[in-house]
Amino acid sequence: MNFKIPFELIRHFKIAHHIKGRIRFRIAEEVLGSVARINSDDISAFIRSLPGINDVRINTIAGSVIVYYNPLRVAPSWWDQLLHTNQSEIPQLLAQVQT
Image (cartoon, rainbow, N blue to C red):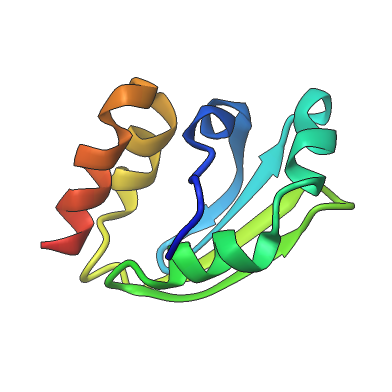
C-alpha cells in the first residue's frame, strides 16, 4: 500500500465498547474533520491486512470505527497498548500482530 498511515490520530481514539472479538472506537470530535479527509478505504484496507483482523467498519460522520478480530490472534489487551503507546512505537506494536 502506498499511503501514509496517520498514526498521530490514534491518540484521539477512545474505546467505546469492547467484547472479545469486537471493539468499537470513538474518534474525538476535534479531529473528525481530519479523519473525514482521509480515504477510509485505505485505512480499512491497512487494518484488514493485519493478521487476525476479520472486518473493519469506519463511519467518519458518526466518528466510529468498529474492528472485528480473532482474539486468539490479537490479544484483547493489545488494543489498550495501541491507544496508549508513543506514536513512534506504533510500527513495532503493529509488527507484534504481524508475527
